[in-house]
Amino acid sequence: MDSAHQLIAHLRLPCLAWLIVEDEDREHVIFHVTEEGALNLACVRFKLDPQYTDPPKRVSAFDHYATLGYVPAAELMMRGWWLHCVNCDQPLYIHRLKKSKLRELEFDQDNVWCSRRCKHKYESHINHFQG
Image (tube, rainbow, N blue to C red):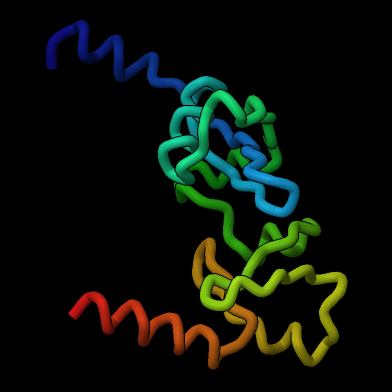
């Protein structure tokens, strides 16, 4: 490796956690080195218009998840975030769910489903299209 590549590798900055607000009930955490980069990445990933998207805000509490590339859904919910079932889009807020409903939640990385049945429906749908 030449000295220029070594210098670039040495100066590689860590990714930081940024909060992107899509609308009043949809927020996302994006990891990027800069605010501008986080906004650009979010606009591409979530099909947002940068002209109508607020600048990202730092959420340093999630910086340690940068190597994963996502914040686990269970962690977000424990911190009071609303999430939506990946399959049926039902809003899920841990502090408003009955204990019996809490036990039904299914988590997989940054996804959450309102029930095992809903997760199976989602997986069946995905498997159908993947052939």
